Image (cartoon, helix red, strand yellow):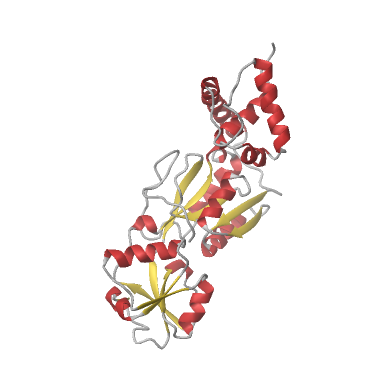
Length: 318
């Protein structure tokens, strides 16, 4: 019968790993009909049904499950061989697609990468956590920076930094310039908040609930830029991640007298597990480890549910 077609095995592995023909096609950069033909050719040549139908959710047959275990080992070994033979990545002319839910740290990581490898190109896209994860899993981005990411064994996570919340008030507010802001004072304030899916709002509400604080009034605004302008106009106060409080003479950022659970403030560098041993990705991880702002306050344990993942990881926007 001859040797198994390596290309067909890669097609099977991508579909079985992704659980989707469309995502696997994007990951392999081929058309979905071509991918389906390769799977069909593999099944026909070896007279083995690998999937229970083609509709989602895809289910593997018993032989498909056994084959997936073998292809996982095979492609992991192939990556280790590539790493051994290419200890130094040639970054000249290569492009990294970086997606992040934090503009500040996306820019800092891009700067660190380009300082380490002057020949590399970096493309940065800013989106919420949900879309950031989707882009990574669909291979529309190479690496991401995500706050409180969803647990997924297909992804590799490394803690990048632990942020903090700051209360942002107008420069004319009675507490402007204070060393700390008593959370209890928020019961007297109009609180300006992000949309319900926002990670900033989630961390803020967790903190308020833990201290049984109900603001006098709450107004929902759907971007940090809008909230910043509203605070400057004296419409109310808000809570921002400390890393997202750029200097503004109209505003004052004050440290509150309590912080939420660090798990809600931890941000991660994320890439697909299958890429983590590549020379280019090893260079990216090295860049993360040399960033001066990496884990500035205290170390966070990596996520625990795959190659590395954190406790209480959820999905959503920052």
